[in-house]
Length: 356
Image: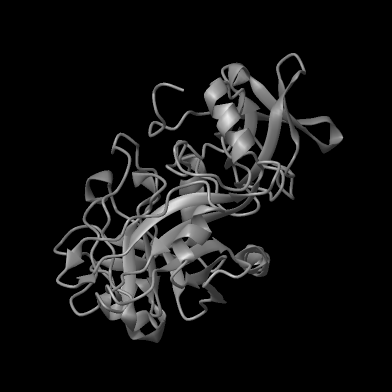
């Protein structure tokens, strides 16, 4: 299915606007392929930052049995079809979910897009995943397909873009330029409102959005880490990360009422016990950092030297750490080579639920 057959999505966003906007303003860049003519402020307002996510890739799953097939593998319900216009569903919708192994640990985190369809068309879905596991995810899907009437194929013609508004108040106002609605999919990020919108398109993202400008990818990742949103295999190591410790429920990524799926038992049991002692928290590193940064898996220590958890991944002085919730309020640090020491502070994102 070519990009021209995909319609713009505008599914309602999730999560409140109580989060604080921390995206740094960066200078506008001249865009390639002549798309700079579409940059600049929209109606005198600030510009939307458009980030090309080259480390994300798409797999297409289509066919009459694609919906029940995916339901048996994903932690979440499938996104509902978008609002209908006449005989066709004209808006894409998106959801967030994980694929788990039989032990209940995360294999792949995906944003799932339901492609607009007509009544005479079979359902079709696009799965956005870390590009480094694109082949592994495709094999995983084919392995479980058996004899279902489902086609699994890569979708290299579309690129993934993240769109962040200039302020929280602008978060619900993303739109495509007139005439571009049939050339791309635009939908709110289903994980949390503070992550803006997702755009799937063949063309340069800023050329499709009023007031769009090309953003620095490092700013996107720093914003994501500050908000405590894991993404990809570095933040969610396959076969290691546990979904509820990774805040899957906070990010609208799991249903506790849907039918069975691979890895459901441990996830459901942990949820119903109501005790999650460790979570991925956003952290800030203070003081000079080692030349190579902090290695993933480095132990985070309390003031008395007790283990509080492990550093997971990051960008510069911000990142994520899997920590015991009862120990995040005290002074924490990481030991580095040569008896060095890097202090670490933990924050609780204000978009998280107030009751844990």
